[in-house]
Amino acid sequence: MLSKVWSSTPLGIEAIPVEIETHIESGMPRYTVVGLPDGAVRESRDRIYAALRNSGLPLPRGAITINLAPADLRKEGAAFDLPMALGLLAASEGKPSAEALASLWIVGELALDGTVRPVRGVLPIAIRARQERRKGVIVPVANAEEAALVEGLEVYPVASLAEAVGLLTGTQPRLPFRRDLKALFDEAQHYDIDFAEVRGQENVKRALEVAAAGGHNVLMVGPPGAGKTMLARRLPTILPPLTPDEALETTKIHSVGGMLGKTGLIAQRPFRAPHHTISDVGLCGGGAPPLPGEISLAHNGVLFLDELPEFKRQVLEVLRQPLEAGRITISRAKYTIEYPAQFMLVASMNPCPCGYLNDPRRTCLCTPPQVQRYLSKISGPLLDRIDLHIEVTPVPFEELSRKQEGEPSAAIRARVVAARQLQAERFRDLPGVYCNAQMPARLVRRYCTLDSEGQQLMKMAIHRLGLSARAYDRILKVARTIADLAGSASLRPEHLSEAIQYRSLDRESWFLR
Image 1 (cartoon, one colour):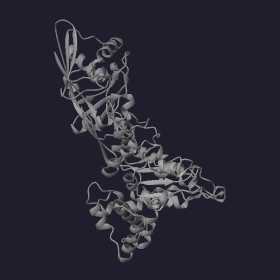
Image 2 (image 1 turned 30 degrees about the horizontal axis):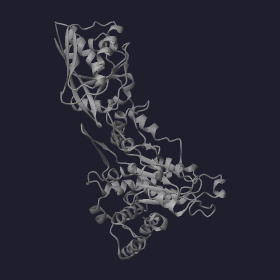
Image 3 (image 1 turned 120 degrees about the horizontal axis):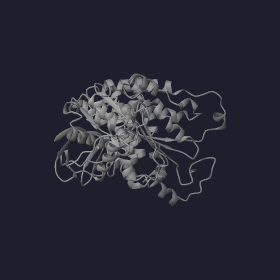
Image 4 (image 1 turned 90 degrees about the vertical axis):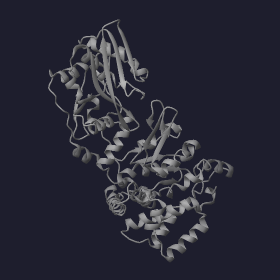
């Protein structure tokens, strides 16, 4: 007898439909799985048989052949356990019926006692099921939260194999799982940290406001304890709230990576801060099976690299392409996968190995060669891709002891959102461009025109600082953002002057390559 069950497997952040065909005929007992199964899929036989026995369900007998179509796509993981078990029951007992299975997609890993365990990538699977016009999905209870994010799709969470059989045979009522998405988004707008807690550092907070308003990359340079990490961690609190589409795409990436929390929804801007010992695969993604890296997990959010020169140079060079393209392509012998990677890069570093170069209160103990080796870990092309260079100085005692709190994140965010709305209107007919930092050269020429005074100022800056063409464009982009914050339609000299000040590393001789 033949049965068909629909399931799916994630590929990148998308999902590929998989049809599980089970054929049972009389003859010598055997169990064969075809269709490029990996080791976890081949081992499913033992898990399925133990789960059937411990659930009080009949064991199939005879010559069993299971085909996972399309046969030329490699099937990985244990998510096919539950649909394969249901396919065996349908082929041997006739229950669940073909009609009950036809409208549903099913995923889940089986424990030996019949419990259904969670799997990765349920959200993209649910999205693809809706696109394929399926009525609903059967998923593990632990994955119900993320699957229910997809509107127009019935989600049936099951805790065990027996419960799944009961749901499909009608002995257990079908009760779709529902979620209040608006309440989730409202709750996500509350942060435990705030810019009001930061004492002093008004110039740095202003620079971060500019960065947030235009989506610009930032590098903070200063001695230990000056507050670089504290400031970076509060940047998401002033970024515009995630839109539903952005939240769904971000959640898909975390779902594929198996990194969703209890809510099953990423409704806040991600903030990723990998350790400096991370590998290039950990940063850009890949592996077996392929998983998204930190730059993709930071999509629509912030990637914070603390102590930037401590990262391996080959790891930092991986950032160059995704910083420009907003995507990362992982090409290997057996697959090519593209992950989104539209993130704000925020990095921090000491000015030298001991951390006190140019500090008026402390003496630097580093020799010039030591400083040069330390700084040379950051290549010129990578430095060019960072729009704002900010010098962070220690906070005076008077500021630290001040009882009055600083400006709260909500007030700064309001100005950032207003500036982003101007940019959204400016780029409304330009797909793929949502903020000033994403403008290609042709748009920079259109929206960042300078008057004669501005051109003279820019000419002077290029000659004195030795700026590259990329740095020239980035100054114009930052100036456009400063003008947007001021509500100005044109670029004035004061906007350009402030933008040039944020290229401080180009002015310091010990940063020159």
